[in-house]
Length: 230
Image 1 (tube, rainbow, N blue to C red):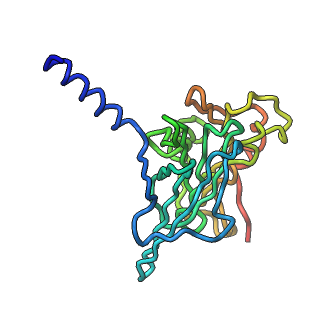
Image 2: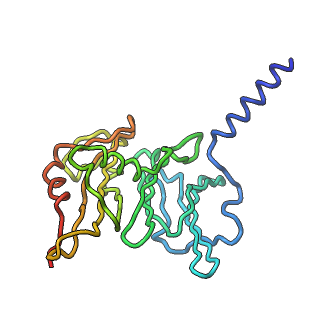
Image 3: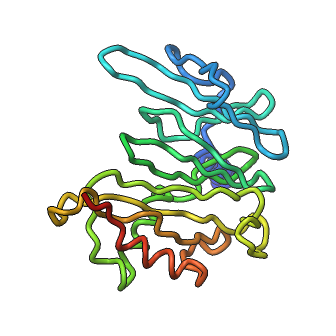
């Protein structure tokens, strides 16, 4: 083997390893304990992947949670590490996974994963919730709305069934429906709470683009004017 071909082989190997999801035979590091709460365990529709959530309590309210996907004897960490346990939903083909991650009181982020090289890996550079909010603020009708707290992105139920409960006939494993909510610091004195309530958009897993189906036009208009008066 020539020096050039030897170098090219090692370079190809290094690039392959760098692109592969982080796998570990031993699972989480020392100090992380598997939660025995059944609500924190999830299994893919094809029964090949089980999600396990591990907690580490270092005292002084320093609590960390890690999520690991177990496929046979192989384990993959679903990053990022967080301060709370999470909820999950799979697509019907078990190829896509959405993490519904609490980040604080009334606040939630979404993370998207896709099967790569036989294991789940992050599907987007930014969180799915950041992408959804960026889309929200890019639209002429919503770009000026400023929210201050309880900022939350939620995945609507129906991921595994193509949202048939809404009466649609969309392809399976193609779309995710996301609702956005948040509240404002400033509002009239006769209003107790004002903000955004369940503004809906759709994410296309094939193209990576957002849109708003016409069926949500009325509810989204109401979501932009949500308030609770005193």
